[in-house]
Length: 169
Image 1 (tube, one colour):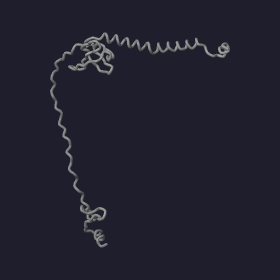
Image 2 (cartoon, one colour; image 1 turned 60 degrees about the vertical axis):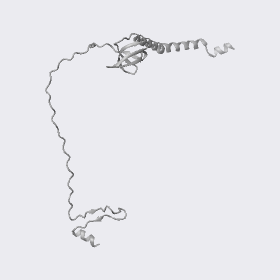
Image 3 (cartoon, one colour; image 1 turned 120 degrees about the vertical axis):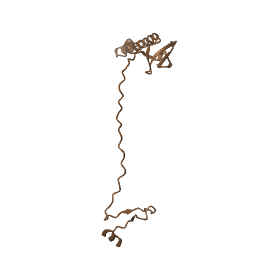
Image 4 (cartoon, rainbow, N blue to C red; image 1 turned 90 degrees about the vertical axis):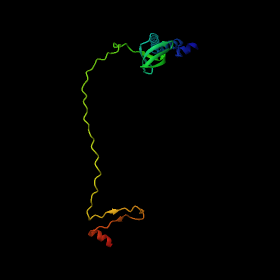
């Protein structure tokens, strides 16, 4: 019966074990080994840090190390502003710059001060005067005490033939 299972392709335990070892080898060389290498390099960089080194934290903060005590690094993020970080929070060390000495300010000759001309903004014009209507047009005056639903606006009498015709109706 065992021969029948082997002949029908029932499976070979050795091929399965080789396949699993091959998959583990690929995972190790593509994922685990590079990660441990990066972790080892980061630990070496963090152990080599000293006072005066410029660093960048994992949060992106640029600072200068003032003191390192065990796992705590005291850094200066601005002149007179000192904070403490975990040593593991240091992402990388910035390269040393050639200009580590403060630059000496050269005296600058005083330039004559030129005042900008004063620009006056245009003054807002007064509201336009009301336009006079011709005598032939009737003007409608609103009665402030009148109810707009029940009482219509009162027409002003106009001395014109059209106005007179309306009065007679």
